[in-house]
Length: 261
Image (cartoon, rainbow, N blue to C red; front, top):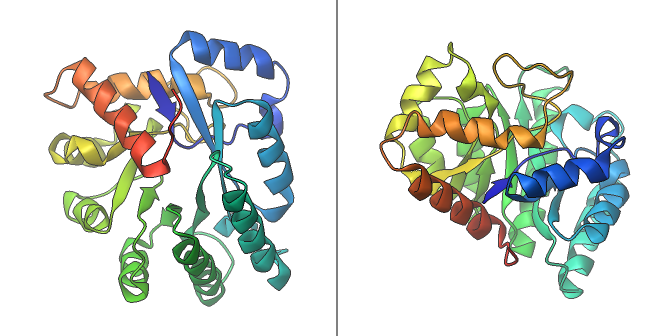
């Protein structure tokens, strides 16, 4: 059994043939998919999608790439929506995200940090894990997590980096999202890191439709490729395939409080 811990299944490219894709996921034993939000405008469609299909889960938040039209009211709406979902016992909302910092975008870092901290504070108040977007900002995000004493962990999405950095995030209660990058022969540094990290700290993700796997044939990535990523991880580890599969599955269920199989 597998969980795609990060897939933008609500994007337009998946709308055609959506039910067939879900059937294919079921056939491939990909039991659950977690859909992280990118902007406030998409929150309603994500919630509606997950209400319709019980094997889908979601996170709500504002991604660094979507800050141009953010308004102060969005954060009040985020907190009130998450609070309402918790009071309703909405178990399909499993995190706050995708949030973080990105040095490769035009939005200035001061603005990014203010929005990141605002959302991090909401997650702390509501006792929710967060899904982190980290691009060339590892040290700063670690610093902010420590300064704010954020205590509910989450997932470092699209991890690539050193064993030292990985362990710093692990100490703070974070799992590392392992995606298509490890299928690429040039990703030697990340591959080597993954040989030494504790298996209990890893989760699998596709980031579909983005983050393509090596020699991808289709125009966009698919959550079905979680099995390709799994095989690439198995090639790096000493544990058996069964042990890896079960531990990774348990890791995703635990960090996101998924109770249904």
